[in-house]
Length: 336
Image 1: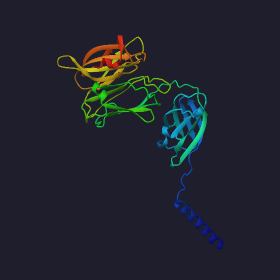
Image 2: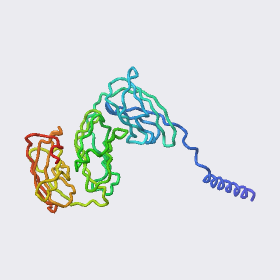
Image 3: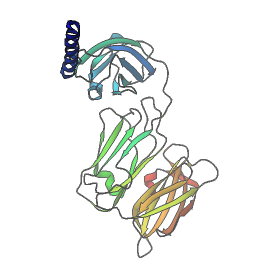
Image 4: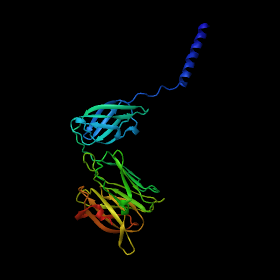
């Protein structure tokens, strides 16, 4: 009987401890700073820092790092971002040489612990041959009620900020009222409308040619259209730019509304031509004159033109046949 009583007490104690354990405070929080484990040189302009724990992305800014070469010569950093995995940081530099560098900086883990590090690596000789891509554009095409009108572009990697991007607004008056600013990590830029509110559709086209840190130019275009009005009114317009001899490259269709006297007014709409020759956009209902232009060799001069073609937005589609341009010119020369 005594043994049974003692056993019952033991069971009660075990159960009591288990209940208490559930009510105990969790283990003490992480108090250890992150430590660097490895440096990987992806190519001449890209480093990957590997840490022993996840890094707070808010602490990853270019000003937190420094890269010095022989003679303590500074290797300029053009961007910093958290890597493909949360314990990695990517640094983008001007092209490195195959010499010994020293990288130092500070990062913060998810618990707020600040880690300071210093390490060495040998510069890469591998040249980056992959051109940048547009991975983000805002606002989305067709956006309405954009009271604070702005356009944002994000690239897949930092680009050379010494070269201003080529872009086109329609109506053309907006070229001078949007304020241009690079993002801090050089992986994008923003254009913000400085003037008062306006009505109608605003079109924006980013042209190819923006180079990355190795000089690889952006090949494609980026396009959006939006309005500050509460409703974006317009008819969907689709069509094809037809050229049988070689791939089109990049191209644009410019639309000018036709007035009562049959004369075209300033350019009021545009659409990018995709690789297969198709294009699509929205225009206010009415009669238009359309001109198609294309750059086949990437020199920012339009060497193919088509039109002008007149059409009504009630039509189902529009075909424009392209021919070689006798005097290739920049796209802005075709905008009225």
